[in-house]
Image 1 (tube, one colour):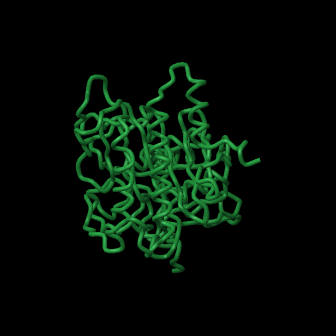
Image 2 (tube, helix red, strand yellow; image 1 turned 90 degrees about the horizontal axis):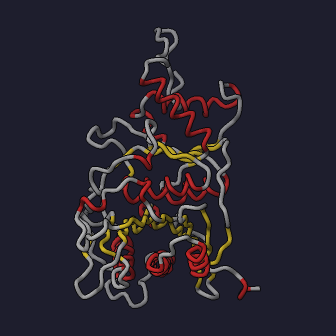
Image 3 (spheres, helix red, strand yellow; image 1 turned 120 degrees about the vertical axis):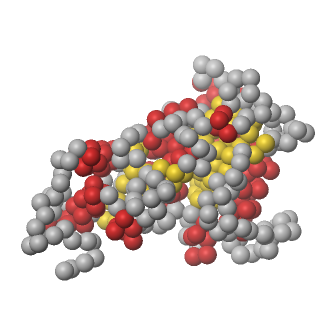
Length: 363
């Protein structure tokens, strides 16, 4: 019956009751985050229609953000919603967002708390115009003891230090997927009662999969180990893998990871030579780290190809890294290919008669 369902609020409270050292401030913060995600879900569902109560929409001022990317109006709205919903509750000492160059300082009129919030307010915003899934990614860290006005250095914590991580996906239904460090659970927004309700308990990624997601238009920039892996998948039953693979690409990390959590697979945005100044495409603090925590808690693996993502020591808040995550066996295969390449053990035999061919070249 509806009133017996486990809502996200109830789930968080019960989880804290079981904890050896309950953190009521964390419960309050996660409740504020879920409220923000509900508001963003409403904004995303309205597309180009003005959001009720938002006098700026649809003429929201946008610019090129710190990433060098053109903001969409909904990027700005989602960022404002997350800040406005989470800044006042007294649980946070500061925030970092993809849309802001510097950390956001909690206004002096509000009390300061013991947590730091790092987030991407609207992942996949390039999909807005074509009505594809978008989402919000967030990570919760502890503010160092005694720090009330955190600076850049206080946010630069490895992924292993995360207290909680999650994402919301705004598609045919709105869902929020969360880990508190003991498994991954999915909650679907029930519009009848306005609450996220537990629908996907203990989500687990199958260790093996025959599905992968990668932007093949960047193939010419890939390193050899990535080419090797994708070529083997494309060869299917005729190649060394001996099985056919399916390829997917949505251009939204939230949507890609959500599919992997539901049915397995591999997602990667690997290192490439397209822009030598950028070692990767995705941001470590508010994309790679929270998603890596979720994937690992669901039994998968997350790597740069040369190391575990969660163990990386961040050097800056908008740092970019290569990302390979999903079913454990596939990630481990790619890690092995990188190691063999770096050791010079997989150097191809080159002759004019037998040249390696691209995915789409036939001669």
